[in-house]
Image (cartoon, rainbow, N blue to C red; front, side, top):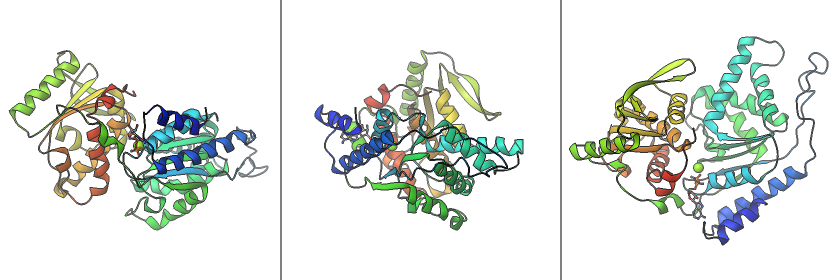
Length: 371
Ligand SMILES: Nc1ncnc2c1ncn2[C@@H]1O[C@H](COP(=O)(O)OP(=O)(O)O)[C@@H](O)[C@H]1O
Ligand SMILES: [Mg+2]
């Protein structure tokens, strides 16, 4: 089936409602798939002739433009990208969350560096290995959070594009807004220019937030804090774990151990400060989200800029839980819409709120855990 046919089918069956921005995106994705299917197979594995032809010898740039879908939450960006990824027949291809991709890229670069091989830089070598593993990369939620990512992106993607890799991605922001207030942003600008040259940028901004439609039940988010909330959280944890006693556990992330104070039957329970009050990062939260099918958090406070680091970690945690389709139960000081009372992460927190709302819906709860 083509992507447009699949999209029409969802419309016809009533699973989704017409949306002109989505229609346009589906058309562009469909056109890209057709072009990809027509593009003759190129010699895929890199053939390396060190010293003979130099490092550009195996490059095979196709000139094909990928797609960059951006817009606010709940606009169907991930749905469209997944549809594309499922219907396109190019192999090998990969679909992954952008953070996960960057984590993998950093560890690959690290490995190459340790090996200390001469010739191409570790970043180019890492890009070559990635290009060997996928002709098409589909990323969900491209976002640049730290300087470590910002400083390797241009070189990494220059090489990926030279190797003919096509990128389709979703994002909450226009490329020009990536890493917006980041350190040494001037050194990041070449990546933006490169990206805009290699992907068509499509705005899905105007339209409905479809996530809000499907909210049900209040009992997974308990507020205000107090005896009643606590009892209900206890009951939820018991139900999730068949009443098994909770015990301390550890999750190993890159040879480090992250302590989990209470866990049973693949469900972990933390007090807010035990998971957002200590120095954990995206890879820790992803590992936790992978390991446990449900996470229970007690005592989420209203977040002001006084606890901006905790708020930042909470955003990252919710992203990880959502990506892995973890079930989520918590008690909180205030309703979800009032949870963020700071300024610094206002933009990012909109997504967190939207996700927390969706994570209470029946359809989210029925989705399998992506371990
Ligand atoms: N046109 C539509 N009609 C009804 N529901 C939709 C439509 N587009 C998307 N949805 C639903 O809205 C939810 C959010 O979509 P998603 O792709 O996750 O959005 P985004 O990635 O832009 O945040 C999904 O459950 C999706 O199935
Ligand atoms: Mg999405």
